[in-house]
Amino acid sequence: MTPLADDLQGLSTRLGELVVGLEPDLLPLPEVTGAWAAFVELERLAAAGKILVARRVSESGQWSRAGFAHPEDFIADRAGTSTGRARSELDTSKRLADLDQTADALRRGELSPEQADAISDAALVNPSAEADLLDHAKKNSVKDLKDQCGRKKAAGDPDPEATRRRIHANRRARTWKDSEGGWNFAARGTVDAGAEFHHVWDRLIDQRFEAGRQAGSRELRAAYGFDALIDLARGAANQSGGDLTTVSQRQDGAHQDGAHQDGDAASGPTRSSSTNPKHLALIRVDLAALIRGRVEHDELCEITGLGPLPVRVIRDLLGDSIMKLVITRGSDVANVTHLGRGVNVAQQVALLWSDPTCRVEGCHRTRLENDHREDWARTHHTRLDEIDPLCGHHHGLKTTVGWAMVSGSGRRPFVPPEDPRHPRFDPGRPIDPGRPIDPGRPGSRSDQKPVGPPRARGSGTTVRQGQERQAS
Picture 1 (tube, one colour):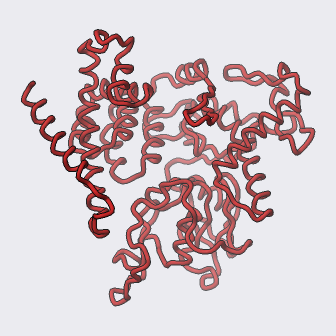
Picture 2 (cartoon, rainbow, N blue to C red):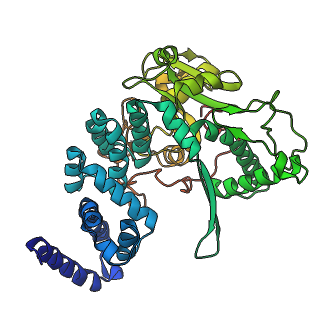
Picture 3 (spheres, rainbow, N blue to C red):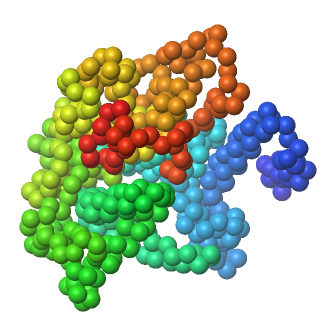
């Protein structure tokens, strides 16, 4: 073996001995997090080496001599992973050959495989964005990074219309049964088609959620999402009278008149698309891009929460859509003040432009409550620069446990009272030993339950992006 292979084998042997002798229940609780973090670091470095070498495994031809049709099949077999994951790692490895900054960051353990995949995919199309994306990865969640990568990739695309046509041509929806016997569904298509789907799907999810709330039960939103998907299928079958050949057909870049109808099985007959708009979305577009017909540099043209799309598509959607259209000359929205407790329509649109997700750094939830930094009972006014959109989990931490956003604006850390960055930090305040001080990356799990008891109806409204949010 080569010296490198010898060294790696020695590390593997030593690590194997440590893991074999590991007894988790014997670790003192104060040391558990440190041990776990060390394993995370080892995993990240090992994954970095595996990705960097993957393209050379492909070039070696050993996979063919071993009887495999493709290198990703060989990698998946040897690593015990799925072919899809192996293909993703191989693609990342090939892209990194031309992206020195990203490859170096991966070597230093600064990037996870998922981050490296997203950055390399965007930077290969838009090389000038590589440094910005690496900096973005240090400060934001993977979800935020992927959104930013999507924008940078779209901005660097020399022909966004051709990209959209290619995505449409390769559109797909497939189902499969997993090892446990569960039915699975996955789909991929253009962003505007996704917006049309969400217009109906999100409404059905809200109906399911409200019915569950009134019945005194509560399930994860993902569970209601599955039920809503089945409602869509049943609604289509009912609308067509069982003859699915009459279900609407979609053409590339256009819809036939009357082709799409909204509704579900429980609501009975529905109105035609001529009276029921196909889209309800928040579109963010820079004025210069809308006039010019294409985006340049860091300009935006996207459907919030879904991603970028060509300016031409935005122009087409303006003809038959109900939407909140925010046209800007930059990233800031003019401040608005009014004397009511809740935000008004103009403020809500401004908030959705600047903060489509929870403002807590690392959280990407979109069901939000507009939180006053200073209690409205004291100020008697509502200003955008005094509002922080928070998800239910973080609003619960603020209300029941005293956590707060650090001073500043935009996305920023969310800290407990014992943290010196807390706006009302008191160094003499005793620490409650039963309260967690370090939230890790709060809000990173979509199924995390809110902290504290449920709030009374009317004290705050959690809604999906694109709907009015009541300030608490």
